[in-house]
Length: 462
Image 1 (cartoon, rainbow, N blue to C red):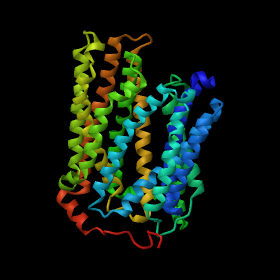
Image 2: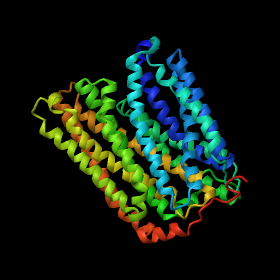
Image 3: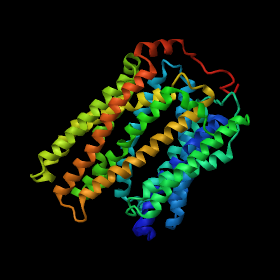
Image 4: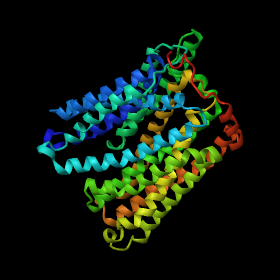
């Protein structure tokens, strides 16, 4: 992209950051749009918009057009993604929901590795001399097939209360999230200038103003963007706190290891993506069975998953330490990392779907707020990922230094993954509180059996 478009380093950064920022900022609004305008309709519009935005990305002639197209991709994705979990929540009875979300996790794990491998392969092949453009063009046939299939198999649904769109709330929430996420994403690249701290400080009064306004909207008898009564549901509130801690370490795992392999030891994009294949297999396999296991042991599956993740992190750190004084390139043979990456993937595949199920599937959340709670959860997760990448990424790059050696890369990796290890240990402890407010596994199974098995006719839009 740099050579083809003549892009400056800051512009290349915005190609990536623009998507992450736009996606995170718009998720709450995207979730609410499904409650208002029917979830299948918003899903299809988002999917179509994302496909068209991919066309614009592939045709971009300047860095500015590419950045704008990436932001458009993010906005359409933010309207699409929340509908997936909202539809799962409504279409599946409570006892089947963990399995459905587990299969959702399986697809996400599979997609994560296919995206890296396919992206690296397309760039390496340089099809028709198009360089980087096929990584966006590949979305067109996928998007068209998905639109056709989704239009046939997804049933329509909407909130029975027929809420309206709170435009002032959308503006305040978007501004608050932008003030929070932009400096987190861009601050480290700019060496944390004064403006980044000013924006972070401004986040608090804007979000406080948003909450006060939303309370006023409720008193006026209108529909708020965020249903504040959701925070009175203990499993939602505690689940969101646990999610912040858990997801803070998820994104940075890939960031530091990708830099470690590609910049530290000269792996190609395709080879670096191949390194994560055991992780993807572990995530996909564990996600597929997380539902039945969760039905038997409840939230304790998150404890089990975080234990496996900690074991995997300890394995990587130990391996890095063992080869610290050895020829690192030879010692860090990918075969040594296969079981370690798979263990970490198994842990994430068990913990993540169960955490999603606990928050969005809480019995205290009405079907009318399905999109709202999904948007709230996804925004929390995305913000936590951005925060973790910024904070732990700083640990990694500070240890790396300006002229890193192989030993420096090992030290930096160990320091960053140690932070992730602490976060997963904290998640393990917080889950005990989540289990306490959510009830015992036996109580959860009883609640599952008495839960309604079908959404109401009004919620289906009939």
